[in-house]
Image 1 (tube, rainbow, N blue to C red):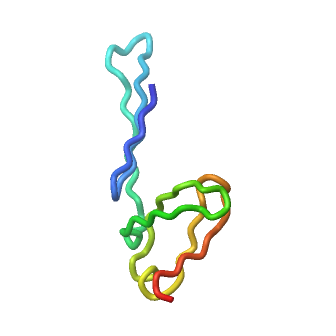
Image 2 (image 1 turned 90 degrees about the vertical axis):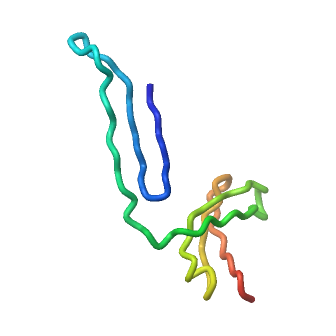
Length: 84
């Protein structure tokens, strides 16, 4: 069995497998996410395929200019500007 937990600043992957000698399940690894600047959740709908995508972005970049985000459905990169 494989499980993946995504927190704001940490990703935890774990597997539950038993060896012949072990009665306890093996534990997974935990990895900290290095980029602390991406704290704003951006949700957009792709104009080409209609897929709804969520991405963590830098709030300063979003407020001051452009943010590029890739669609989950068709993998197209979109330019997103909040201030026009």
